[in-house]
Image (cartoon, rainbow, N blue to C red; front, side, top):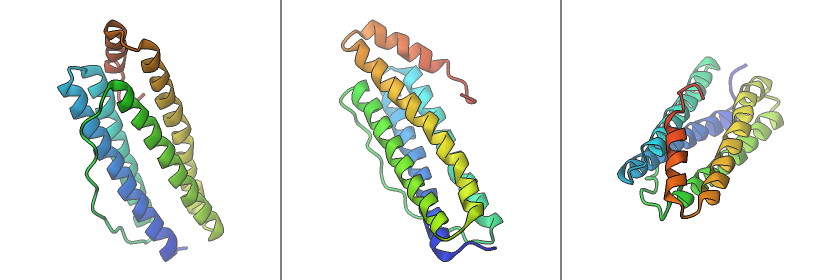
Length: 166
C-alpha cells in the first residue's frame, strides 16, 4: 500500500524538522567552539550528524513506500546563547518538541490505518525517550555546576569523549 497524501506530507514535514534539528545542533556546535568548549561542540556535532541521519531514514522510507520526497526550506537556527545552561535548556526543549511532533505523526498514521508507518515511527519514538533523558540529565548537571568553571570543564571533557555510537 502506498502512502496517503496526508501521511506523505506529514513525513516530508518531519524531514524538514529533522534537518532543522541538524542545523540547530550544528549552530550550537559552532557556538560552543567559539566559547572554547570543545567537548560541548563535539557532542553537538554528533547530534547534528544523528539528526541528519534521521532525516535520511525518513527520506528512504517515503521512497520505499512509493511516495514523493518534497524538501522544504530550513529556518535559520539561533547562533548565540547567554550561557551553557541556556544552550542545554534549549536542547531539552527542542527534543521535547520533536517528541510532540512525532507523537502527532504517529497518531495521524494510526487514524489512517497506516500500520507500516506506525511501525516505522516506533523506532523514532523509542529514540526520543533516550534523547529526552540525555538532554534532561545534561541540563541538571550544568545547573549543578552553577558558576564553577572547573566543574563545567569536567563536563566539557566528558562530552568530548562521546563516541558516534552513543
